[in-house]
Image 1 (cartoon, one colour):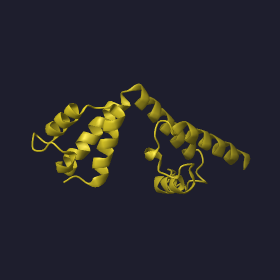
Image 2: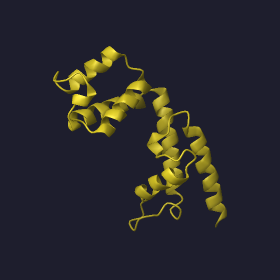
Image 3: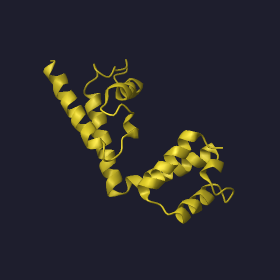
Image 4: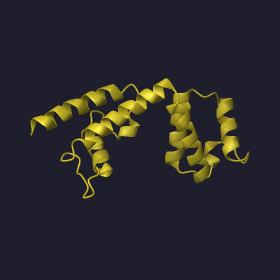
Length: 138
């Protein structure tokens, strides 16, 4: 049985893609070799493969490309503020610390990938303001 977070991710992507119920059930059958018709019956590997497939489908849409571009901009700004987001000894950003910051201080207090396309522009603005403040500190 698939883990709950995989099932949730599949359903979120199904909604974003506006998949019909028939297409969705057919996809589940395809990923499970016709073993099940419900995402709850998928094994972890099947659910993850389906999630990755739906994610690629989403990223191919104009909305998905816009969402990815905004998330990448936020990540790039965070990487340019290593003192605020705990840089690791190897010079890379500590993403666990970044996600903790997101849950505690971002405007909706949730992880980056939980923000919707409609919510991302305000988050980008928050990070741009944060970056300006960061630069002023030097």
